[in-house]
Amino acid sequence: MSESVNVIGLSMLLALALTGCVVGPDYQRPDLTLPEQWPDGVSDAMSDHRNDALSWWERYDDPVLNRLVRDAAEYNLDVGLAVARVAESRALLGFSSAERYPTFDADVYVEREDEGAQSSGDPASVFEARGILNYELDLWGRLARETESARASLLASAFTRDAVELAVVTDVVTTYFDYRAARDQIETTQNTITSRQEALEFQETRRRIGASSELELRQAEAELETSRAELPGLQAEAARLARALAILTGDEQAVLSGLQNLGGSGLPGWQAVADLPDSMPSSLVERRPDIRAAEAILVGANADIGAARANWFPRVNLMAAFGTGAVNPGDLFTGPATLWELVGTATAPILDFGRRSAQVDTAEARREIAELEYRATVRAAFQEVGNAWTLLNTAAERLQVREREVSSRIQVVTLAERRYEAGYSSYLELLDARRALFRGQLSQTDAARDRLLAVANLYKALGGGWEASDEQQALAAD
Image (tube, rainbow, N blue to C red; front, side, top):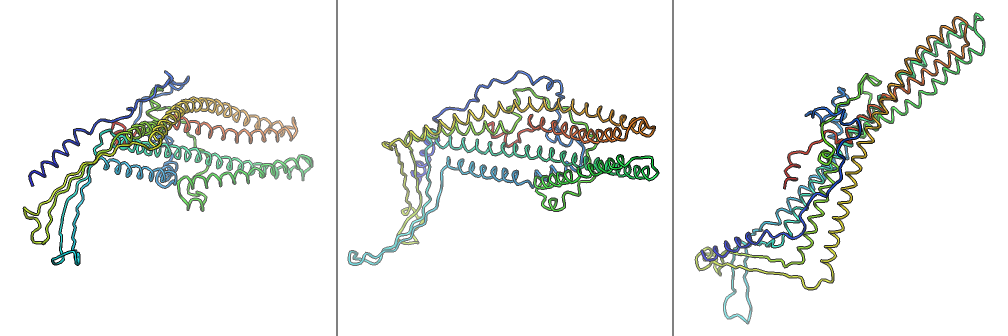
């Protein structure tokens, strides 16, 4: 018995000693030509890194928005699908990692046989109980490379989940601002309708006493109907955006109710958040989850090359069995009944008509594709940052212009009313001033919304303050 144990132990030590020669290229991050500084103006807006950068939407201090984002992170179907894929990748990594270790099985064998005329005795019985250990010597690192690829796949799934969640959160924020802007424009239109209804009643009174013409009365009627015609389109847009929010958050009840629980209408007096997470351009490849996902895919593709090349080399398997066997059950587990077996096999490829070569070529091609996709993702990320910053600046300038315009339009309406009441101008001049004010107020709301959307898109382009989880950092370190 001691001899068999020593043989098995020496076999395992030999396996451990031989394992460690890993074929295939080790991963190295591709050389990237990264900008040395952010686009003009971005670095000036950078503030000290804040720990709450991950929850950047909370800086708007809107509890309704915070609730919608939380619901989306928990119930959104795209986020749920990404989470399920992470769980699948984690299970596959567990299976791949287990392949590198031995398997131990129990085998119980009972046989009773009567050979008929060929046998001179009674029917024979055989009883055996064995423990069987199987192990593949990973001499060339095939299993190690497969585990490396599975680990990279898990990382890619985890980073993709983060990218999906970031995109969904940004969609919730932007759709919410669109909805609040639509509600604001509905309120502006309703106020305008009320004002023009009062103007029509005023003209009717003037018409009855002969102080106004039929033309002025009809012009007031036309302006009232024009403002009423604006309302259905805005209401339809608000309903569409409410349904979009409901889908994003996974709240089917909100679809039916039209998100009436959002509270007050209109865009509040928010200031677009201008302080940004502190980072250098080169760190964008670490901040954005889509870039990290693309690199993880590249790592996995690189490991697949090693696994494919290892198939050119022999596979060595060890099998060790130890147990007891006897013709009588009472003799089991006695010294003479001890049985053991040690088997080593080596399988070497000789002729496969190009199968293994095609596998290596496929792995190398996929690695090249993954690197190109990684480079393209990095390039697109920097382009998105520049575009988002440009849009933020132009949106801020446009909002300032619209605010000055509305302020001037209000003064124009006041002066036009005085001139009309004093008889210095026609009613058409007053109508033009009111019409321009109404359009200016709608445009001001659009500009305020666009600036808020530009800030959200800039956070998304910068990675949204995203940081890798402890599990992702550990996997990346491996």
